[in-house]
Length: 385
Ligand SMILES: [Mg+2]
Image (cartoon, rainbow, N blue to C red; front, side, top):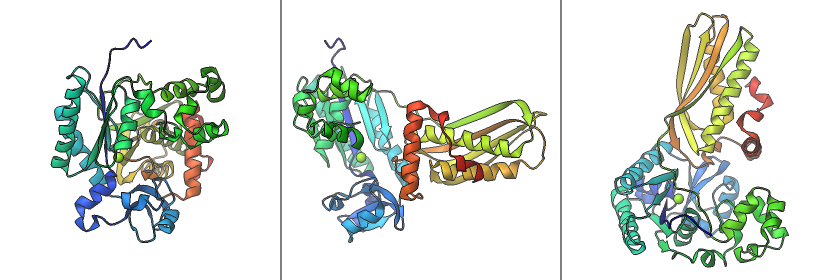
């Protein structure tokens, strides 16, 4: 039995956010099929307008394929500075009105509106907030209102674009039942495919699979699947606080002058914090390298860079900074790397510069890091950047 007090959660999600920002910057792009992402023919779709979706274009798809599907679309690479600014603007509007909110990505928010009012009052309040966001930022936003985060997010997705939807308390399972399983957040392509092999394509079919079977097939996520199929989600709204930087340092047990070793440590430190960045769906525009010598002299060097969370680009930068710094050939006691000027970015953005092959490799490495922890695996090539 559910022993938690009743909650009311509002999930808000800006409609094709990057596209909307580009259209605010240049009104000639209104109504034009628009794809954002990539560099020339390389990279992946970061965001696409609704006009392109009916041709089968979707986010994370290779740009080359998107161009084939929708040859008349305008393709532009992103302007993350502008996206970060507009995201901040919307965050400010929400902060003003919301008692407790979580910013779960650059364009998505959860608000815990429990006890603020009765359910109907929350609906009116959220509707007013939607209008206010559009008025103050020029950006269309959709929302879903439900008893938990999971169901509110699915409701928003169903309401999009420029819509709103309320799922009455107690009707969560009924709302999800007819949907294809991929509509449940956190059910990715792999899980969908495994379920397909079990003969499950809709949520209602997923509900027929016994708990112990799901746990046997999917391990720890089996229980989550069982709960989600029933619209159960007790995860809390985590209050938002802005993290200014991520950093990592290593002090050596014995001071060293071995440049090859020092360079390999720089790469490992950089990969570790770049992974933290990607976990938070963030990008950095400034990298700092610190060297402390055995006599405790400490020198740092920093450089502004184009927004990225890519291991490859950041490690290359960090090594270049280290090479400039370390010219005294003295014993080194400590090395540090820090990434600052952080902004939220879609998880695909940092891969603009990568080919699909690199993208697959990077994602495979990250999934291992998620499983076993960030420090477990490093690019062997990394040391040679
Ligand atoms: Mg969005």
